[in-house]
Image (tube, rainbow, N blue to C red):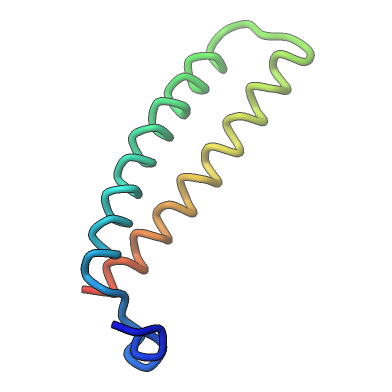
Length: 79
């Protein structure tokens, strides 16, 4: 499918969506590990910069997970 065909149909080639779905799945797994570790760190008695950095990691991981869910929703619409 050409670029023009993609623009007109709004659909990505099947091989592209398949690969993107696999990448989104792998990204979800990596983000889940980060979120779990962040949660466990937040349960520790951290102070000062350590607590600040843990919160920063948690916020960024949650933002990335939200973006990944949005990407997966777009890919679902390609089916």
